[in-house]
Amino acid sequence: MSESLQKFGLVPIFTQRLEYAELIWPQIGRVMSVQRTNHVVICEEGVRIVELTPALRQSAAVDRPTVGDWILLDESLTRIAKVLDRKSLFKRVGAGENTELQPIAANVDTLFIVTSCNEEFKESRLERYLALCAEAGATPVVVLTKTDLADDVQTYVERARSVQAGVPVETVNALDPATLNGVRAWIDETSTVALVGSSGVGKSTLLNALAGESLAATNAIREQDQKGRHTTTHRELHRLPTGGLLIDVPGMRELRVADIEQSIGLVFEEIEQAATQCHFADCRHESEPGCAVLRAVETGAIDRRRLDNYRKLLRANTIATATLAEKRAQGRGFAKMVKEVKLLKQNKGTR
Ligand SMILES: Nc1nc2c(ncn2[C@@H]2O[C@H](COP(=O)(O)OP(=O)(O)O)[C@@H](O)[C@H]2O)c(=O)[nH]1
Ligand SMILES: [Mg+2]
Ligand SMILES: [Zn+2]
Image (cartoon, rainbow, N blue to C red; front, side, top):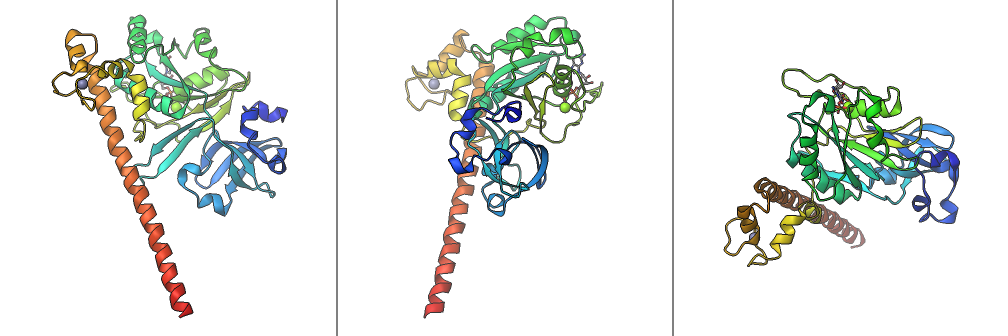
């Protein structure tokens, strides 16, 4: 095992599936950032800026390397030839015309869901991130920033704890290093932490505070409306001087995700639990007779807001999943058509 790559989080699980002949240490690396066609990769020898082999360039978007990926370079050491099996993956359905699945960050062990102790705090946003986190296969930690600006930090802590049973909650004032111990406990030499959350909550400030130096650019938020400006424009993997790998993930705000029904169920455990008692197996908990979930909302055992957000996330997931399925079917249809045209042409030629 390469010692210098261990510092970037390499553990045997990533190289185990490689053929013996493929295991050439100078060709193994990790993607630090992606800039259009260029990938910045850390290898034994240091940082390299590389491209993709034509075969990889033509593969499905979700199979192409993203930040955090472990990869294999080709012999020229200028192109990524292979993405090693991922331990976890954050992905999204592309916006607008491009409804393909896109990878966001790979091999993340822990997700810091960053939110601040002010108007920005919303339970529903946390629930959305938690479902994403479960889907990706990472461990969530809610990080409450700007504790110095709130009088009632404990209220925020309790609200954050209410969004998923057992979810850890840490508090920080990113401007005071003495408050970082709780968060630091989640960071170790070889694990990778990704920071997500709205623009302006303090992700980059926290990253810099943990590093003890300025690794990422930060930006003052507009005072009038508390809205953050987008400073970090691309995702990047950073290594803390004391060890530990952090990925700043800006712009996860409008994540369209598909196929996360099970993960939504995990976050809203009490609702799914109650639903097992509904009269109809396919109850939608809207106005059906014998609905145990609505009954629980009436008695106060289940929070009305939770039920509303649960249904909203399920609806969004259904739409995204349908769009994706349609896209896949179109893709198959197109491939079939190409095959048929080819066959026709061949037949013409032989006739
Ligand atoms: N008072 C206070 N300000 C903070 C804290 N964390 C971040 N900020 C400020 O919030 C603004 C936005 O921070 P930034 O790290 O750029 O947010 P990002 O968009 O999430 O990366 C900056 O002016 C920071 O100085 C905190 O814990 N307390
Ligand atoms: Mg930032
Ligand atoms: Zn029901």
